Amino acid sequence: MFASSIFHRLCFLASLVLAAPMALAESNTPLSLAVDAAWQRSPLARTLEARRGESVAGQESAQSWIAGSPSVGLSQRNDRGTNQTGYRETEVSVSAPIWLPGQRSARESLANVSADELEAQIANTRLAIAGEVREQLWAVAAAREELAEAQDHQRHLDALSGDVMRRVKAGDLARTDGLLAQQEVLAAKSAITAAQTRLQVATARYVTLTGQPSIPSPIPEPIAVSMQEPHPRMLFARKSIQRSQASLHAVNSTRSDPPTVGLLMRREQNGLVSGSTQSVGIAVQIPFGTNARNLPLESAALTKIETARAEAAQTESILQSDIELARQQLTAAEQGLQAASERAALTREHTELIAKSFRMGERGLNDLLRSHALSHEADVSERQQKVAVGLAHARLNQALGILP
Image 1 (cartoon, one colour):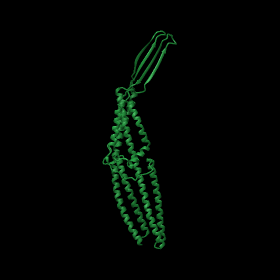
Image 2 (image 1 turned 180 degrees about the vertical axis):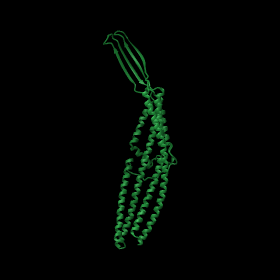
Image 3 (image 1 turned 30 degrees about the vertical axis):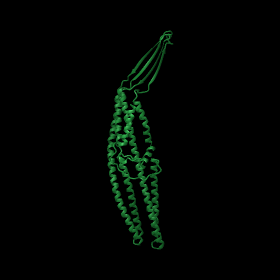
Image 4 (image 1 turned 90 degrees about the vertical axis):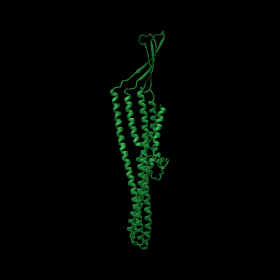
């Protein structure tokens, strides 16, 4: 029986693995390794994996005919304080509570379903941790892009400031233009410092989550063709319903405490010179179930069923909503990237024309700096939209239940 239960659990685990879409079947990718590292650092993950031992112990206990710990009894009687005829009686008993056939099968079913629910909870928790890793990884990517663009902007302003200062010394530009250019350079340095701080914060959060000091450059995930079947969130909700139903069945099958069966061995000696007699007996104690015992247990089991059904319905509704929202966000991110790329190309061309006019003395420094600021803003937007598209890919796969 125990071997069959282990085989049942192995089949269940295999179904979770084989249900993943083949498009994302590659393992040992930087993202999957990061998820593995975060899983190893998660206290909840450690607790759930430790509960596997409890689950196996529960299955072994449910397969036993003994419903509790056996007990040994010893009693002795004599007449030393009364007649003093040498009468002596010694009795040794061994007893144990046992499951009735229906009770034992109900307990086995509950133990097996509880083991399945635990595995579903582990899969659901791993998916949640994967979502945290995805979010933090793309947060680092966004901070990196912000810092990179701020550094590029400063390099452009450094080159422009050098050109302006040479023209100021040559008398082509006023001293105020040189001061204005230097102010823009200092402002760009302040922006770099702020961007570095945000990158440090994002990096620290990622390292705290995964324990990995080296952060890979994120690559947009290929979008899954369809939702994972079974989805870890829905699977956990369904297994919770099944466990609650199995618990109710166990309560209905165990209307009273288990009966106790005992074996008695008695030895009697009637006098000082007479011989002794021995006898063997069997004792059975059958408790009666009462409403005071059964109704609270049955009511609690029914409450758990209703709660699990409500949570499953809510999970299904939220799941569909999350998937639809993730698809809409992906569409919006792709459209935003297209618009940002077109805008960045136009602002770069505009800045090149203004810079050419500035060198020829046809435009002032204010026009050039404003054009540089607009170009910088457009480049930042384009970089951030690329990150947004990658994050939208990750969020859609997360909503679909895809593990890296």
